Image 1 (cartoon, rainbow, N blue to C red):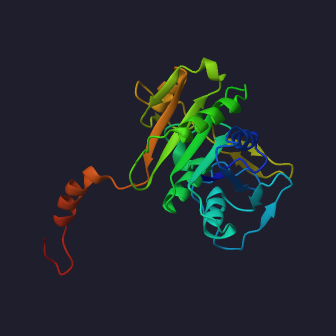
Image 2 (cartoon, rainbow, N blue to C red):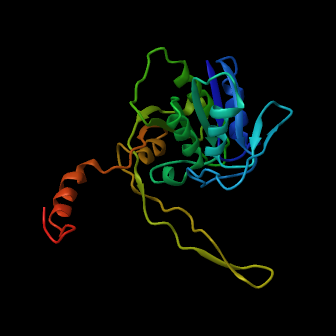
Image 3 (cartoon, rainbow, N blue to C red):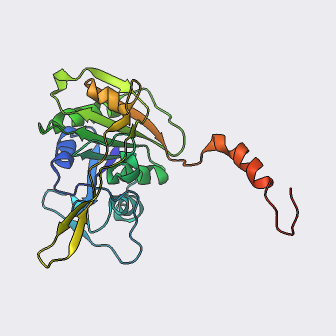
Length: 256
């Protein structure tokens, strides 16, 4: 099994290093990750300049681009041998609920899925204890399962792991995405040259965070495993929207 590892925190991230160490012996591992932190990059793809790839002494390769760039290059140009799957992480903080819209970690996994590979995004719900080894062990267990898992097209697993030792985990729960409350306001500051600047405010707390959600699972000490379908169509809205549009005046002055 050939596994591509990537992330959004950068090639030197402790989570990526722990993931690489934790999957040793499971297959042939290749690491292609951003050369710096690209948290919040979402699915951005660099199209306005060429990208530079650098190989590091530990065998990892870095790209001066986004997480999506990294996976795209790795699958479509850097290697002759194909990959069997993509694992993105271990992210240094949670990717719960609405976080996945912004997450470069999830974006790296979805790019792998867009290119036809099963993919997992994994994040540590960091409480300052740094139990990346627990998250790496969770990923290894998922990859070692003999029973095939068919999520369907354009689907990935989004995994969030509590920041506790392995023996302290309560177990595993299959969850849905919750939703955060509105983010905190932008934080103004003045730079040394006297210009007004702004920090993006902190993410809101879990507003929809009850039983069944990823927020609730990790709060109870469980690993949250959420199937994420990258199809943004609101299918149940198609019929009422079609009725609404057909009632509008049509080109030529008539109605449908």
